[in-house]
Length: 210
Image (cartoon, rainbow, N blue to C red; front, side, top):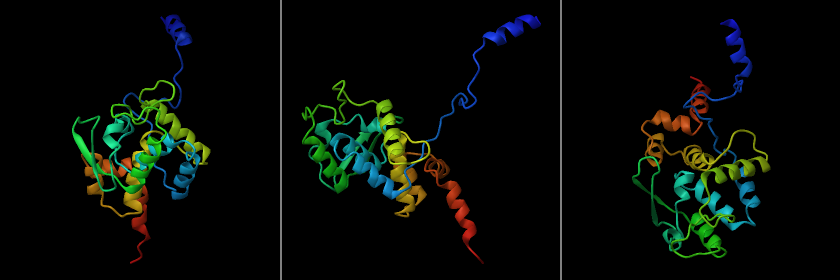
């Protein structure tokens, strides 16, 4: 019996020490540094599709997978202040945002060189497949961009959405309850954890001298 156990252990594949538990996920971070955002935009300046994707992602509360469902006809008429609705991937309900001028300009610039800017064409089209980019591809793009501008940490497709929320809270001082509604979260604690600011904000409480 002991021999059998030894034999099994000899052939068993060792688990990686950093292998996440079942159901767990590795948390990606927002881009906290405004200068790093500028550097990524400069990095993407020669590629209007990538610049549009990044600009759109960090200026809305949409998930990458939701953004990638967009077609040209949904955005080619937009002006700053217009509402845009996309079906949420988790709840299947439509959620509206208001687009700003930076998003409108990025879309307009990309559509000038879009390979097939007809209404039914994917907005963020893959150069390899002529279909919409995948979330996996966007995840790799974000990791690469963040690495190339010198950011340390874990970044991915959710980084864009988290960056929007992080700066709405930190730069624009928006209340967590409002961001919770924008993200479609069920609790404020979930939003605080999602934005990676809970620990920092709690720490700031102890800066008050009474």
